[in-house]
Amino acid sequence: MSSATPTPTRVRRLPVLGALRLGRPSDVWFKPALSVVAAVAPPSLLLVVLGRLDLAAYTMAGSLCALYAHNRPYAARAKVLAWVVLGMLGGLAVALLAASLTRNAVVLVTVGALLAAVQKVMCDATRVGPPAHVILTFVSSAALFVPQTLGQVPGHLALAAAAGAWAWLVGMAPAPIRPHGPERRATAQALDAAAAYAETARGGEEGAGARSAAYAAVHAAWQTLLAAGDRPSTARRALERLVVRAEVALAAAADADPARLRAWARAVRGTGRIPRTGDPRRDDGGSRRTDSGARLDGDGPRQDGGPLGERDELVGVAAERAVAPRPLWSRLGPLAPVAVRSAIGCALAGYVSLALGADRPYWALVTAASLYQANITLTWSRAVQRVVGNLVGVLLFAAVTPVAQLGPLALVLCILACNFGAEALIGRNYWLGSVCVTPLALLVTELPGYQPTGELVTDRVVDTLVGALVGFVAAVAVTDRRAGRRVERALTAVDHARERAARLAADPAATPAALEAARRALAAAVVDLRATADAAAGEWWQRALPQERVVLAEQAAHRTLAATVRRQGLLPGPGTTSTYTHTEGASP
Image (cartoon, rainbow, N blue to C red; front, top):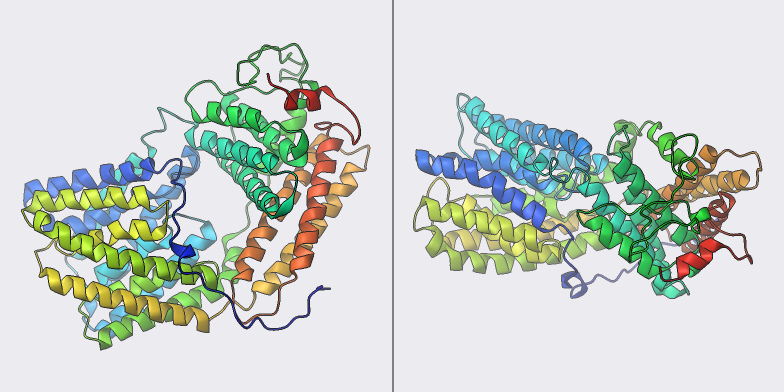
């Protein structure tokens, strides 16, 4: 039963300046930035040589697929990139067919809005992103307003497919050089997040936020390792042991050594040997260490061929790999409000743009499509970021236009520079990336031929304002009224997972596999509860959320996680002293 009276939420504060605050750049910001340049440059330069730069819009559609899946292990990345390319081709095919069959702008906007809704839902359901559906919507919406004939469609699709294949190769190119790069980065982020929580372990609001972030990072690290394939290598098993160490640090943050965790994270991010941590229950076992505290030898092989404690620590990984993922249809149901919101908002934005006499209503459509986030508050923030970024971006476009119009090669070079700048900056804040995305979109319109700069700037400003305003109004009108129910379901899932983990922790006959599976299931349920509660907290026109129950459930789950880790022998019992506690808190 909720501890709060279920009354409607009337007013929510919508941030403005906070939405524009710059964050830290991504650890791998240069990877998508360099990848998109490597994917766009060869096809575009080839078309310059052939004198057919008017076809570059189709090759660029395929090349932009190189922006995806940089956080995925290469085994999973290969599949994700292939599906992204196929999804891009599917949306482009529908758009080109519609453009070849009718020039009715209202029909084309309607088709674009429906495509945007489908792309949004599919990307959310499959968790493809960033940049998720925005690039796919931009490609298909722009293609709707390019004059076509049925005879031209196969050739244009072939160009996009060839560029998409090249983008796939670009995305997979680092695999032979650093085959475990994504897994190493995810593990390092988990260790750093655990260290940050250990530094704020004395409680307070900051500590609670750090704890949630740390559990999310550890959960993400496990998902990355599980997505790497069914054949664990020596490197992957070493990374899995490090993630176990991050989990142990979360369960006993007061006993953890943040400096040691960060030293492991630095070593993992590099290209050298992955630190071997051994078994936390036997950390005094006479092994030789590096300056970072990593164990180099002395793990003592068991008769079963694995390092001491390895089977106890990692048996849950194999159990989790054996669990089939949720079917796609079960993930689509909760996204129905998002689909309706996207379809209505994009369609209305396009219709209003047409009513104002715009020649490119897809700019308003894409602006609306880019707004929709997990809740109204985040959608508002994205609207502020989009408007500010686009307004600054049109000024940048006006500045670079004289250079871009020097010739086809200059135009391509300007497009490449905007591609790189967008991906290099967007990780700090969406508006900063939009400063480069806006001139990029405007320069793409000049691939078939140069157009008046003043007209392009005016149209873009008007369509941006129309798309942001109409799109946000649609988001307010079509709220996610089932957000509260999902919080209740997430609370129930945490309660069930906690009860199972507590029961197994108290059972002397519980197997290591069962304990590991229960601990991981509870950790995943806690992460899902926090994400669900945060998303629901930003929605309007819904019953008050049981915030107190959420906090109490999280606290109880964290206590059970610590008890489960202690039951596995990875932590000492309360009030006892162990070599683990001593060594974790001491300098190596």
